[in-house]
Amino acid sequence: MDLFVIYFTIFVLALFVGVEIINKVPPTLHTPLMSGTNAISGIVVVGAIISAGGGEQATGLSTFLGFLAIVLATVNIVAGFLVTDRMLNMFKRK
Image 1 (spheres, one colour):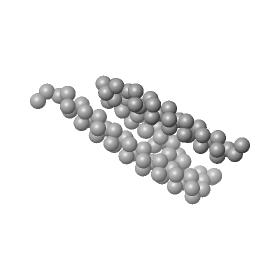
Image 2 (image 1 turned 90 degrees about the horizontal axis):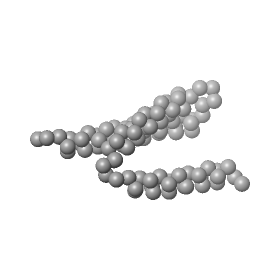
Image 3 (image 1 turned 30 degrees about the vertical axis):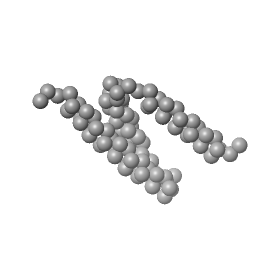
Image 4 (image 1 turned 45 degrees about the vertical axis):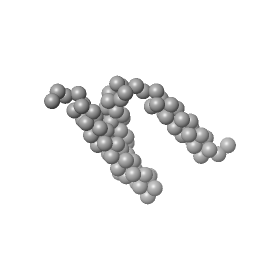
């Protein structure tokens, strides 16, 4: 069996599991989980920097995918902090 088919199958199954898990999260747990997701995205940024940095085995594709991962994870982190801040401001007394 082709290795791509195996990896793609795992990816699709992970998507379904992720959607089911996210849909089951109650609203009261949304903000703490978003903070955890921001921490995970920070780890992704570090790995993407290593990937984009190259090294001896770097290719144009790995550098591009690393750069794309840096951009997307950074957008996720910034948006997550903005949403978390907005939600926490809703609970402050006026």
